[in-house]
Length: 303
Image (cartoon, rainbow, N blue to C red; front, side, top):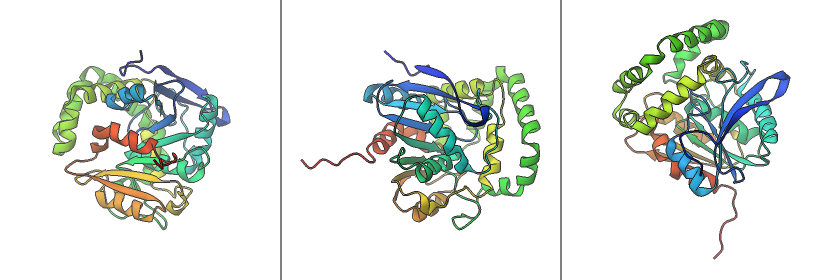
């Protein structure tokens, strides 16, 4: 029987321009597919153990995907976030998936929305957990910590490759201290994230994902930050598929008002407030999130 500790399948597929994207699967090999887009930073294994177990129990094919520049995915900076969808389509073809719901955590939220906007025939619905909001254009939300990336955009664009190499080297050097470093980070967070990061299964997940994903490279988070400061390549009004959005009302990284702003501008979206939780609150309700998202687009019972 599949277990949550390790993927049932892990590898990489060839996508466009001779590049590769790496992925990890959990749950059922033949069940309905759910693509999970990691946060910033993060990688393909940044999926809660609860979600992995639920994929087994519910017969879901749960697929985590590395963005370019993490794991064994080829480093690449898309012109816009929307350009990622072409690689997603190739990946789905390669692993034999016709349709897939998509969930995006934090920095993965814009990528999930892109899939809903630009691949609606294959992505019937989207879930977002504390997702980043646009910073430019008609949908821009003002304020919040993301404005630091906006101010640093030229530096990030010019230095993302050497900065990424330096980050990779630093993570390798401090690998034996990764556990204490995560504990220190947790100690500085609001109570919601602090409580979640104190749970052994979440600490194990984050450490495994960080150390596995950064073994070769760490440019993906920097590429994300660059893309968050640009137009996404689609407007929120273009996301015609249903969206379910969860956001902690004490989120200190992506303000709750940013989530409310995005949901208000989406054609078909519902916002669920996670009371008393901060940025990672959505990870603590993974089972309920998966159940809600996987029902999007299914015929309603008339009985």
